Length: 450
Image (cartoon, rainbow, N blue to C red; front, side, top):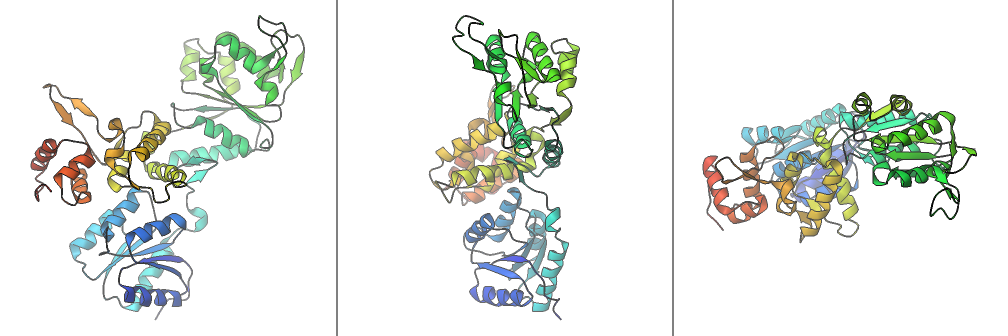
């Protein structure tokens, strides 16, 4: 007996046309919307274009087989439930499929009642749409716990006029947070002004922030409006606030307290209605303790602190960030994609430059890629696997996947290269002799060099 009519979108991937037609008919009879495709390439394209609640995936497909598709999707962070179906299944294959991230496995031929029951069970386990963690918010991308906390903090503070202090390493996206606060607030129709306090000399920064009147100093040939006045009714973002001088800190504190600004050389104060979002890569509490930052200004800025996690602490977000970058590149290269090995390499890197470094690496790789696929060897050298000089004075190559397993990375490269050591070495960015030595070390069988 079939389960009652249900709802859900199912992606059916099988190269057997008869099976596709009969299975699609069965699932539609159960109340599901079914999208049948014949191979992995069509499946990936469909997943990019729309959301599915379940994927039925055949093991043997032309091109990339089902196991590799599961592995690639999970590396990308694609969480759609996967039910694998195969007429060539073994216990070992089923175990491997589940290990790679499949949710269930059935062997062909499949009894209609059993298939209906398994599909219904998997769909019943999925969380409600409202509980699925979002992957982007106001230009910020992430599904990790750290980023979801940032999204929540932005929503909460945006409803107020509180001053915000955003902390985090260089390249983590502090200005994106400031813009998200502005765009989510009642001030979103007002101006958003931003300045990097570390990029200007003290005198220039003072006039940039507060403005000046004609004749207040040599070269002041006219009145100039400062950013506080320009941001009236909106938001002023002060990036790298920890780099300003103690003299400017005093002036800034007065503006924040009095809600009015005096241009350089003027005795007249102008009221300003501005929300300030400040950001810094520095530890301001330490700066206060070492008397390089005013304590009273710190507490005036630190009304609502938001801390951005470094990319190395949110590696699970890397596939989402990569997909966001690829989406932009696909305006001119519609089929551009990142190979599973390249994704492993990206997830293994420590990213000292954070999201900014990742975006630069992907832009560079896209330029190097001749076709529509970014391979590991297209990534910058420092990302894919830097050469290290060991204590003996020789060169030692290190390349790891997201779990630090060098052997599995080499196996993946060999599979991607169709068994060719020369091609695998090129993918990994290492010499053929180095690869041959590592294959012997890890007891990896060789099929000869092609």
